[in-house]
Image (cartoon, rainbow, N blue to C red; front, side):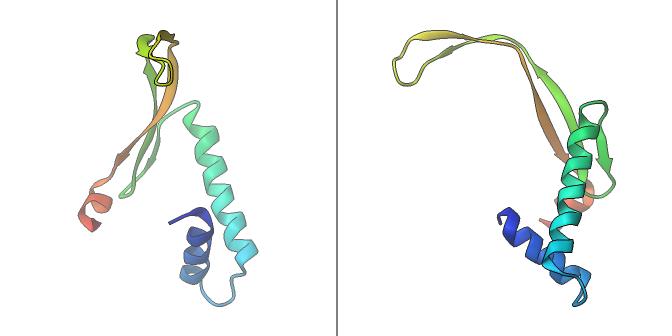
Length: 90
């Protein structure tokens, strides 16, 4: 499912009176809120899951095009841990 399909699903779940633009705005608001909040703290949605920032240490890697050894800098990434209800639904 891509973002457009998700917007259509949100629109359908909200009912006939909801426009596609309103569903798009709602989805964008949720995504923006999670993005801003996860920079400062974990974002936990009970039953769905938890978004958190994980630090990845510097490490050695290999350039797949040239086979040359490279150094990969330390970075941050977002981790998602599914909640119990989401796991049960799958």
